[in-house]
Image (cartoon, rainbow, N blue to C red; front, side, top):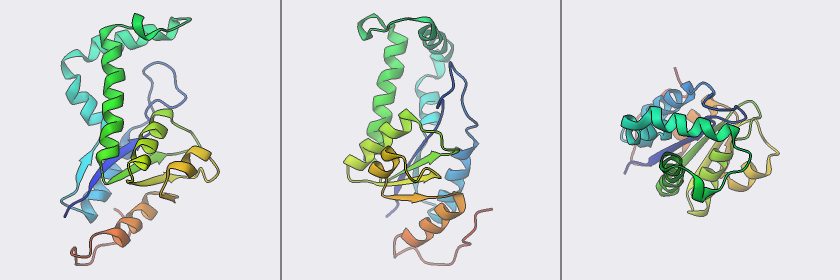
Length: 176
């Protein structure tokens, strides 16, 4: 039986506006997962949001940008586009909770509030939460992780150790 994986990880982090960290880690995680579990279902929030908002991306980005200059924000005053991305965030955390494994990529000692919410929701749903990070003392990471690993190679080794017993055959330990 194949497992499902939710790819949590820093998008915006401490950056302002629409600036995001390099999202290349998502493809690297998906590649490693697919190598160890070819039938795995992979849920990538970046891909899902692109699908959900493909026809309204520019309008949503503009509505989101306006928030930076607001002194106070009240939900009842937010535009439908902003409410739409808020609802998408909640939808994503629900997908994290429904996935067998939530993989949280948290590099460079940089916390991510969105990733923390996805991790917490998955953890409270009894799912496996794998944090790939060097944050060994961050309370949110400690409280919401099943396992904390240092890097992609350690994640590949973990996948090898935890794959279903029915999956046989040798696979390389180090990802390409």
